[in-house]
Image (cartoon, rainbow, N blue to C red; front, side, top):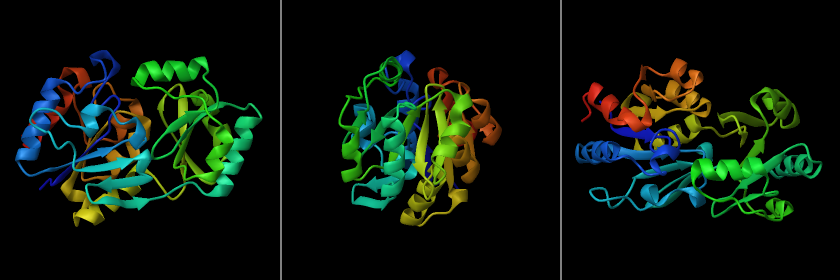
Length: 263
């Protein structure tokens, strides 16, 4: 019996084609899922500082928003009671990454709990801002060394992922967009955040369903009892999933929940 549902955000709950809002059919499905007693969880690579109002503030019928937040690709997990798991970057990893940025190997974002900064406002970063509907102001990247940082984004094309792995051997490299790859602490991941949440809720993997669209969702879709890839998802997500539903803008979440008898 499904007792918790994990949802990626970009390309799963929202899209740029719908103004970065949750479609009404998805809202209705989430309301019904909550009414049936299923815990609603976010599982995103975004920082809490990047979460859109429809995720943090809820909407009519779901005014108290989601129950659990697995953010920063599993590195920071919290609910109304506070943080129950976190995995910040090791200082050595931060020093190495910042050195590569200073040498001009790539543009980058540093994701903290309360803010996200870029090393400079490049065209690729501006393109990501348009894609996700938020801003990434340029800041003193060196200050990342003096505060908790949970994830980096390196703006390189997919064919350079292996090079980033060579430069950051103590980190996981994952990807949602062709614009950039995520650089995550090796001890962290979306599956790790999901498991920490399941432990927190005293639930099993078989009692969890997860929805995602990107390559960075694939391991999460494999990990839970039931993994659902969006119709607009990547080949990696679809291969990892138990079920492929429709696009985010075509009722994909509602259709999948109905398929499994959850609404």
